[in-house]
Amino acid sequence: MTPSSAPTDTDRGHDPGRRRGRILLAAALALVVLAVLAVLTVDASAGPTGADGAAAQDPTAAARLTVARREPGDPLALGRPDAPVVVSEWGDFQCPFCRLYTTTTEPALLRQYVDSGQVRVEWHDFAYLGPESVLEARAARAAGRQGRFWDVHAALYRDQPPENRGEVTDASLSALAGRLGLDVPRFERDYADPQIARAVTDDQQLGARLGVGGVPSFVIGDQLIFGAQPLGTFRQAIDGALAGSR
Image (cartoon, rainbow, N blue to C red; front, top):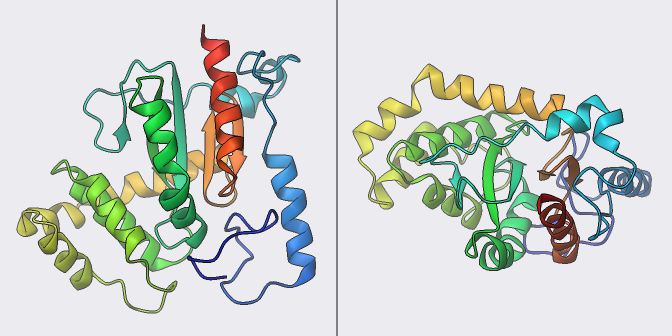
């Protein structure tokens, strides 16, 4: 499936065993099971832990409640630090399903919830599709030190090449920084900073501890949503978390 193709209900995320070519029926059926297990329907009248108090019974769900950074000036976040709800996203810049979410669903969520001060979005790297994923994650974070993370985020998804074909290199990312008007020498220093490489690794390890196994994945309250789900799925989860925050 190409990034511009419309997804089916069973084809909305990138998991470790998937390739970009044709998908066997068995893999599609397995993804159905994964999506059903990962997406918890939230009753809009219930709190973020649900009627059964799932977070109190599940240590992983409880850990998700503590993931929000809420740091003022965080370059990898959009929205007010004191917003009632934080949506934490784990993504990979090579993932076509992450691109699909970013270009088709996220803009509506930003307009409805982030611009109104109800939701804050915080980015986390899950750069697991190959070495070029790591290069792009480092580049976006390096741009973040100049306050330009989201510009690079948008550019990497807009012009996304095929996975691990050699098109993403140190030189191509420096050229991108130049086209976007960044201070390129500063960008290259930050891009090479071991602290940035460690931050990329740390984000992936954090996601794995919270149950993230593929991308895109989202933590909203104690819920984990997997895949480029329809807009209504995110609205239901966010509205349920907002109701529980009051």
